[in-house]
Length: 257
Image (tube, rainbow, N blue to C red; front, side, top):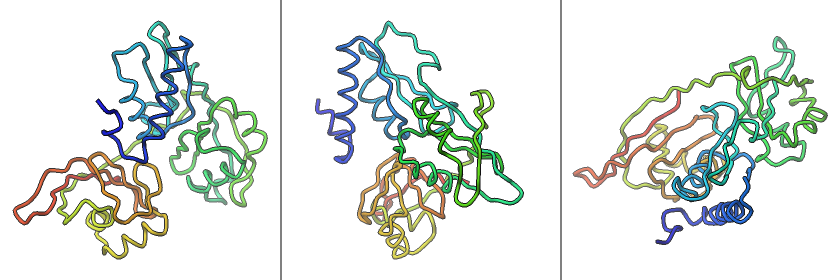
């Protein structure tokens, strides 16, 4: 069976990386810890590694509801615990009454430290408190250098896993019919905007499919794709339910509230 036939072409390079990790575990008979992976990457790792072989995989990013997680590939004899994922947790302290800080500003400031996105996990907030998850190997560097978000001066307080905020997500399901599975067509239907406006959003790099910026308006969507549009939130293509009598596609989608 050709493993690659089940994945998009742009995912093949990542599959090769996963196979290298798996081979490393089997050759050295020792665990392999990855950087933070987005949910689509985690799904690919899960599918490639499988559940019945000599190599197993588990994920952790702080809490089960968090999106970005590190994968631990390990031989069957190994029994992982949370310490093996090498995670550090910080709460950002800032003058709440005078400054507004959001996810995007925090991420931008973290990236300006010169570190890869894959070294950071989720950035979670309840409106005022903001917490970040980072790889332990860069935690001290972040502590020493992450001192501002935009024009706001901040400080970091290390916290425990038990002090992490709970994430609560609400999704609303809806059915839509579309003439094709093109990204611009589906976004227009889900967001109730014109197809032309959807195309502008895509071409301007404001749309992500499965956590990756996609600038192709003709990109063909598949079941379980997660669509994120800056300013409009996130949607998920749950199921493609088939064709209507007028030869349109009937889709079940969810939108995050």
